Length: 361
Image 1 (cartoon, rainbow, N blue to C red):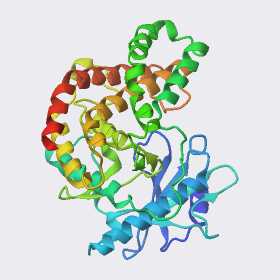
Image 2 (image 1 turned 90 degrees about the horizontal axis):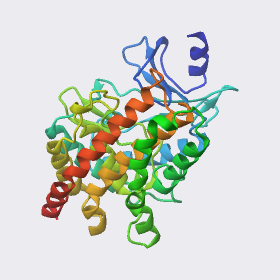
Image 3 (image 1 turned 60 degrees about the vertical axis):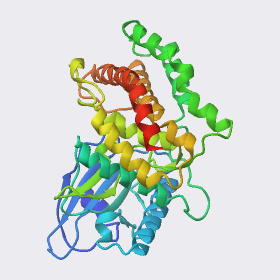
Image 4 (image 1 turned 30 degrees about the horizontal axis):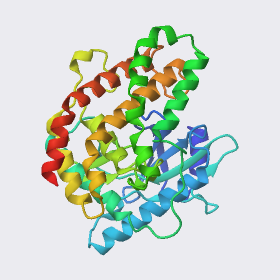
């Protein structure tokens, strides 16, 4: 607590700190709520940035500041109120930087958005409004001024790169787990050519890159107590990418009928009501800037991101669990099996998804 209070003292906060407590259950960064005594003063969110993953902290924080400032400007132009709850507010350090380095760790701070909740699962109704919100998020950033955003994690959603990582893990077999996983490795490699289609389309000039969130899990969105959408959070990976990624990652998470690490595979499938609702909302708000190719390939995005996450979990499992936090030695294997089961369900429902998107067009 004393060390954390020292970290907080290096940020431009208001009020007297009363408590610093763990917040959330993120897989990457360590997050704390900083509570203040005075009722009229805000509370804050303090995060220790995982520097092993986000190696250019200054670039990442600059991205976040540019994105949130631009969104705030757009909301002001629309006459929106309560802006501190509808976009993140970055708190600078006392030296003017957007982060603080204590000699070992990098830290950053934002205002806590009060009376906000996040969900691990959403209803079809929530999905429709969330689809509109993510479409609006991308649409508001189409005209972001200045230089393009930097890549906070280079090749983050590059399927060719993720498969090269899997190939390295297979060749090294660092944890001695390949024999157990070989049948699933074969299944994934049999799909590899199809799953690299997005990169090929981009090289051919067919699929553009936009500013995308790149981590559109349902719990990266905040709602008010009545269930109204407030804002998108966890902007660490906001950078140039394909809209297929943001669309697909939402379906992968919110459209999953079970948890990401569910061990009872019979519980896992894609919820088509969630797909239809999210797709309808998303296309309604994003259609002004999307190309026909982007819209037509949204179902492929759902398949691609689920495949990609299967590959990533399996790669980490083969490497000996060096990336994701785990709760047990087999946690990444359980995640891999769950994601692959979801992928199979999406593949089975892809014709229906394509027909629905075609009707939207």
